[in-house]
Image (cartoon, rainbow, N blue to C red; front, side, top):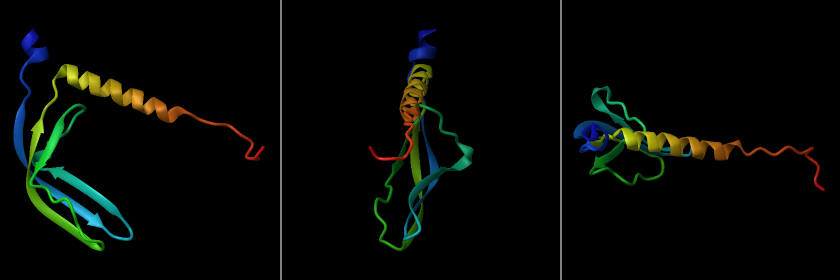
Length: 101
């Protein structure tokens, strides 16, 4: 039973596509893993030899390899709880009549 909860994490490499764009319309970086690999709460993804810079007005699309470390049940539960608690910080709402006092 403890092997299920505390066993060694599953680690594997997967090809991926990295897209970085920096223009007047957008600034973003996306990583898409091949083979339909889904990332779940608590999982870690590290892109090997990832580009870190693109000049203004350019878009860069490259193929790289990513290392995925799957979270175990306890890490997954902790990540979900932390995500929920972070979300509740967004619930802070203020009601006012819009007039300065």
